[in-house]
Picture 1 (cartoon, rainbow, N blue to C red):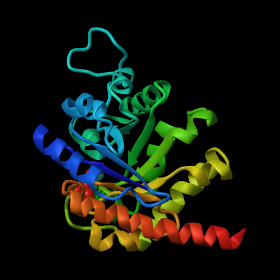
Picture 2 (cartoon, rainbow, N blue to C red; picture 1 turned 135 degrees about the horizontal axis):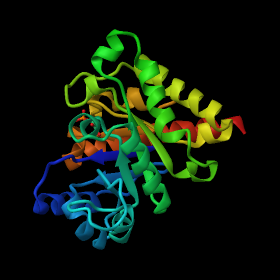
Picture 3 (cartoon, rainbow, N blue to C red; picture 1 turned 60 degrees about the vertical axis):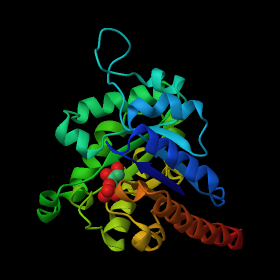
Picture 4 (cartoon, protein in one colour; picture 1 turned 90 degrees about the vertical axis):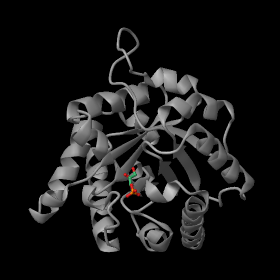
Length: 260
Ligand code: 13P
């Protein structure tokens, strides 16, 4: 299970440091649970130096290499600052900052080429869902950014399904809606790669995921954790999400042991 916090453009630098200290003072993440935080980019180097008790994520990366690209930062620069994971394809960047499918595919490749892990985001709008094209939309996004990847990098790919209508709205996908889309993504991965690859790729749910609904969402068969916005800003609610993932992880490990 992976619990990943996306802070978006929130928190002062001091608040970010206080958060990291609060998490460091809490018990270690439960067995089988990875924790990642993606703070605003200007804080990454200092947070990386402090070796926080979680994976350090970036919310963005350049689609170009080093050179005359004012304001951009490359995947290699992120790696040098201690970043391990990079979020690519978030709907807020697709819709507001020109990250179209081509740019997203380029960013995915650059993250993987730099040896980092990518958290690739996909998701449909409310209009897509109401028009019943939500599966097509999400699987087309997968096709344009993931299909061309070589099999050997797939152990550094995480997929986050974030229905746009659920992001920051308080509306959450039902367990059925989350599970059926995750199953479709898993099925697509099986067709595009193979069964073992499809099973091994963590599929995160994102969109108003919070302590009150995390147990139910994380318990869905094809949900392997969450990409969390608002509820990742407070250490206590974030910790509650990590504990919810821990409960599901313990049940899965028990089921795995009984099956073998
Ligand atoms: P919220 O959890 O605030 O809905 O945000 C989800 C998200 O966009 C995470 O990337």
